[in-house]
Image (cartoon, rainbow, N blue to C red; front, side):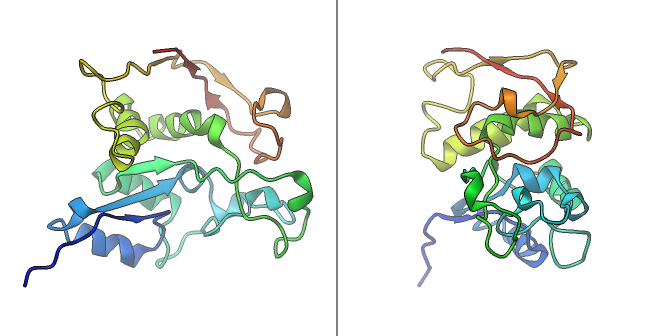
Amino acid sequence: MAQTLRPSVVPILEEARAARVLAGHRGWRASVTAETCHHYLTLNAEDVRPRRTEFKCAPPIRNNNRIMLTKAKLWEYIRDGRLDLVTSDHLPSVPELKGSDFLKAWGGIDSLQFDLSLFWTEATARGLGLSAASRYLSAGPAHLAGLQERKGALRPGLDADLIFFDPNAAFFVTPEIIRYKNKVYLPITYFVLKQFHATDD
C-alpha cells in the first residue's frame, strides 16, 4: 500500500546528513519544507565571543566541520535551491534573562527588524540578487502558511506588499534604531547592512 506523506517542516536545518537525505529524495520533497535562519547565514562560531550570551540560540552557531552545516554550506544550499525559506527564529528576551552565563541564558536571538537587510547583505556578497530574496523571504513563507494565493508574488489579485531601497545605502545596528521593545541584540555593529524601506499595499 502506498504511503501518504503529511506535510512536514524541517526547522533550522543545520545537520549535513539530514540535508543530504532531503537532497536525495526529490520524489517526496514536495511534502517536506526545509528552512534555516538568518543568524546561521550571517555568523560563524568564531564571531561568538566569551560571555556574549546575545549569541546564544538553539542549535548554536557552528564552526567549520564535516558534521554540521556551516555558513558557507548553507549559502551553497541557498544557491542550489535545496532550502525552501529563510526565517527569523525571532525569540525576544529581556536583558535579565540573558546575563553572562551561557548555561543559564535565554536561548534566542532577536533579529526580526533586520532580517531583510541581513539576507540582502550576505546574498549580494555572493552574487545573488532580488530573485533569491523574493523566493526565500516572500514566496517560501507564503507557501508554508498556505497564503500563496494572497501573498508572496507580484501577480494580479495578490496583495501588493512592496519595498523600495537604495542598493548602495548601508547602516550600522545600534540600540537607537531598534524598534522592538527589548533592546537585546547581537553586537554586530561591525556589520554594514543594506538599508530597506517598507511601503503600504
